Length: 238
Image (tube, rainbow, N blue to C red; front, side, top):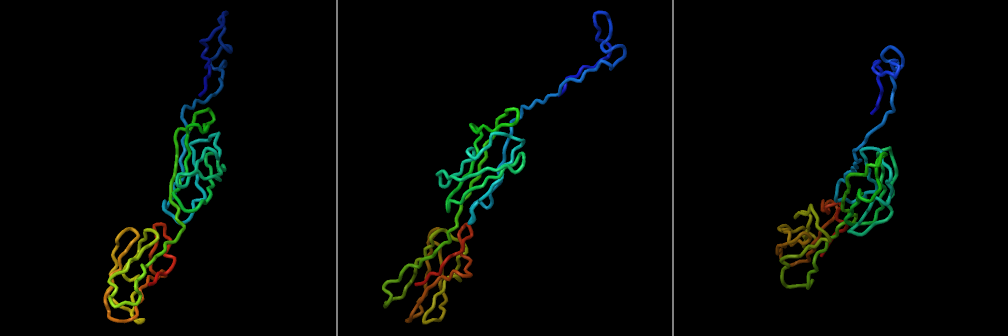
């Protein structure tokens, strides 16, 4: 905004002389300019995708609606499974953008947040930051494993009707083709696999008569993986 004085010869001194002398405009005065800002700055945080992941989130962007002062690493809180994680750094990229560098603290549920109240973040005229921002994700870098329940006794006079298959965590991609039953080295058909819980499955086996049996889950090429995409790590046999 500016406040200017426009001379139209209506301003006279006590002797009747017009401002600036006779003639409109020759007494104009340009006043000082000033700026009024009542708008509080806002901030947005880069979206984390995917939120269940097998690679750590090492950097996120903060974008402010205008240039701010007062931002430092202490204003940004990182937690894993509810406990504080140290090692966050904040670096200015542009006048309104900052890069958060985050440590990898291993598997767990993470949340990074910037809380406006008490942060001291404000624009050039002192309007305080208006909003909080946060992002959350789950890091899972651990591959699932599978275990087939032991068959006892191993030398027996009755068929094995079923075997329990247990994964270390919930998985997707398991089907009947991933479980192989052999007798004396030859494949035996007729198995079924049914989920008993998120991590437990029941493998129902046919009775193919006397012989040496082996039941296995082969990891390679099975397509079995956890929610983060970690594939099954090892085979399981019984």
